[in-house]
Length: 492
Image 1 (cartoon, rainbow, N blue to C red):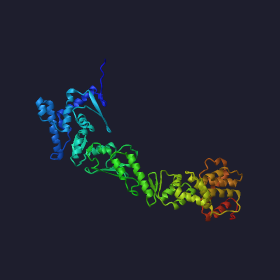
Image 2 (image 1 turned 135 degrees about the vertical axis):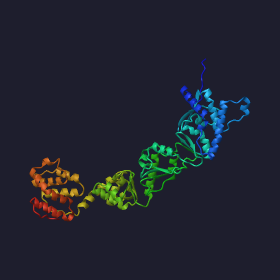
Image 3 (image 1 turned 30 degrees about the vertical axis):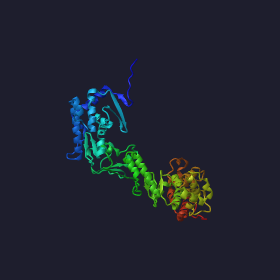
């Protein structure tokens, strides 16, 4: 019967190359056990603690190189420090090899190590057997950090312990800034400000990076720091485009970010959402579209594309005194946002029956329908009406009135559909097209004589298009006289 081999769950058969690397690493610390310990300043608490650990490490090394007799192994001096015990257990691998390795899984990743000894900390075995790795080497010192509240920094050339007071190394600061590709001393107006008190350094992570980043940039500054209170040496502040008008920052958002629970983009968007809520609850009126702030005049100018739109926005804002916060710069978004407070009342006053036609997203359609005729009438109500006009002047009067209510497309269509054999009418039509810069695709319809007269009339026609009500009759009479129809028009 074939003999079966069993292997514990969470272990694996180690490749020969992997065993050789592990033995090589262990031989390094056999020759120099002090390399497992962080550098300290003489005369300090941390120096005293690690000097005792070093003595136990050297004792473990001595017992490995010169195995004690049976009685000495029972009654002789033994390493007492947990790190020294893990060190002694790991040295036994040099002779026995490591055919089977355990696999430890952490949020940072997976690491292989060999189980040796009874009751020895897994973390210390990992830290000793992977001492060359900047991430796993710190595992050997987690107990000292927790017990003594030490600050340890894992540099490329080894560890440094600064005791119970942080003293962040400059090279780690530069390394973290390079990792997140942020220049030291940048002058970004908005973003996350990370300050290190012991180093007296500050860097701003710009808002553009914050918005796009799915990682946690601040974690890079803590990456190679081992501390019981990792945030003690750092302060975080954040400034957005809304911070001046909504300065409050929820503590839970920043604290969750500081603990690495949320990403840069989550921090940024959460704070913006909170600030927008503050702005909506404030007594002052602000105009926010996406992530931009506008004055009332700027907002009205950008959101209105015609005289009718201007009238709708102006009337809504005459009643709506709260802040406006929109995701995009569109009039429909604005009318939906203000419907319950203002828009519905406007529709009700103009035509109460139209309110019942609102279905949840057609506020702009209803308002434009009602305002269309009202605005057009109001824009031309002060202009004179004439009892009887000849065809050329009638066409001109109709087109100009359309242009005064921003109906350029309809005005051009009227000229496009014009059917007339009257040369004066066609010359007037050409002069209007000249004023509107719309001659290129229509020139073939007009004779040279009609174009010539139209060109000579274009200045006066332009004056009529831009005229005020009090000047309208006088300019139209001048055009009438110029085309031979007399200079007297009868006003109703």
